[in-house]
Image 1: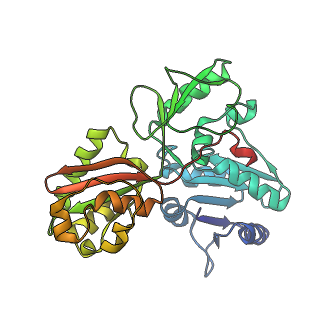
Image 2: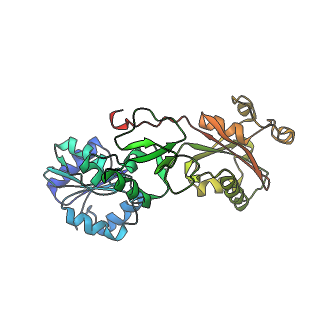
Image 3: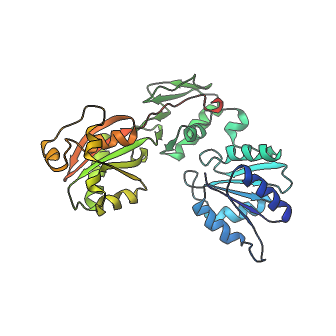
Length: 331
């Protein structure tokens, strides 16, 4: 988490520096003197570029500063406000998905403040599906459906879940496994449930020389459609080192913010597992399969979707080891 602290007085600045010593981030003071920042400029810059904004001052100032920039709970950074005396720590934006509640508790512990948590699930001691999703390294595909799950739990109803992985520990009160889930932990969303997608996928890529970004994008869309795959699960890509200067591939991966790892043919041949062989690929690259082997090596895990070929491009998906846990607050 990248954090940015803003204070308005000398006393507030001292507290901001103390907090930043425990939870590092940039520290600035608002004002018109040399070296100080303007509130609107600082907020716009940090709202776009930081994971968390911490105001040391009045809640009202922070609310007015962030108001023009708020978009959705799926996009907005965490925002926490502490008074300059360090008595209260108040998360005011992105309490669960953005981590503001957790950050408020952590900062409060540094200075002896009281964390003022106002989200209904926390206030009532009810399971918060979006907070759990964040701690399970998941993207929430339909943030607007969070309220359906939380609302049911707050009303005392039982909520059903489904998961493609075993989840350690016992489900929280009000949560039970079911065939008609209200929320689901999966790579392949289907139906009207709230879908939580773990960010654990690595995309293996094979392509002909000179393949364009547009061709790769078209093939990727087809690959996801074929497997009903949520692309949000993918965090990285991998291929053979013969492709490390392919502009189309590099641009395609950059457009998704995926780092790309390249392996030699020798490394790929040593990948553990059973893979789809191709005599043509063997003749060109020196290894019988690129996309599956590269995905497995980069993920350090298992192959989920085998080679898919489309317009001269091949894709495969492997996932990193993953162990969701109901007991995340105690782990």
